[in-house]
Amino acid sequence: MPLPPRWLRRVVFAPLALAVALVALVTLPVAAIVAALASRFVPGRWRPLRLLWFAVVYLAVEAIVLLAAFGLWVASGFGWAIRRERFMDAHYRLLAWFLDRVVSVGQRTFDVRLDIRESGKRQEHAPRLVLSRHAGPGDSFLLVHTVCQRQRRPRIVLKDTFQWEPMIDTLLGRLPCQFVSPNPRPGAGGELIEGIEELAAGMGDRDSLIIFPEGGNITERRRVRSIAKLEERGRHEDAERARRMRHVMAPRPGGALAALDVCPQAEVVFVAHTGLEDLSSAVDLWRGLPMDSAVHALTWFVPREEVPASREEQVDWLFTWWKRIDTWIGDTRAEPWAI
Image (cartoon, rainbow, N blue to C red; front, top):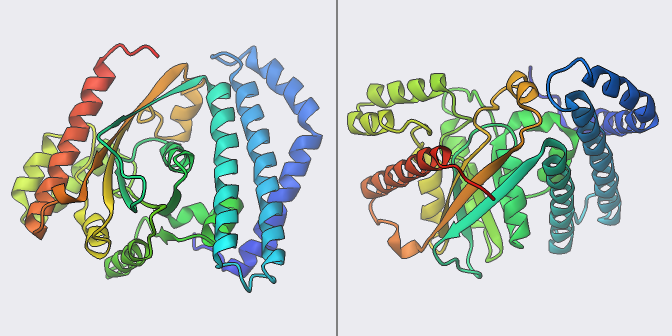
């Protein structure tokens, strides 16, 4: 379904989200009783009640953010100065506040524990290029939340389907972000690369550009298809390397290497995580709640001087790192962690 124009999303979707939040709050007592009764007949520990609580909190927090965003729009001269630095900082603080609330409530509601570790020495005063694997719902939220917690300003490349969500559409639409189509039209790859280059070129010392080089959540069908595309392009060695990786898909180097080219001072950060990949659909999410488990993540900070100079060496370097991520995921999933 094509995305409606922005003016329609602002005039219709945002007020509708506020109305839904109000209805959810007013009807919460009755809905809670119904969910509690339903929980007696549904497997899992209070699954309907947990989902109801999280949904209501999300809607309430979203309503607060939308009202605050509207206030910033008015204060900026009805959008005239919305791109000025102080309003950008205000939007980043609003994003961080939203993620803090959602992640905190999600952890407690769904019984999820986060284990985030670091390897290498990070540079505090340099732009960062964050390259992460993509698997399961919520990993984008957790990654951006972690970036914000590090007092960083995220720049994000994400699917344009997120623009159906009024808060994300409004807030990230005012920040340096790139919405891309999951099924781009022929020839649109160049536009995507140009968008990533624009985001990377404008980065300052507090900015972090987040890219998912796999291009989407991993599924076995997508993994096989990505290998087939490598074979079609004559990249047989890369296809064979991709076959040996069981937990990730082959990285698409275009966007990541374009960002490296236009931001030569950027520190590179690779992110591996596991714990969400078995919840790839709404049905999986319903059956898996409460999770009663941990999401493990490891970030590697790579100095820019370790990045090869030539394009061929950079592609090989990226695949080598993706193999390292694949190995870490396999080892971590096999290990009986306790945190």
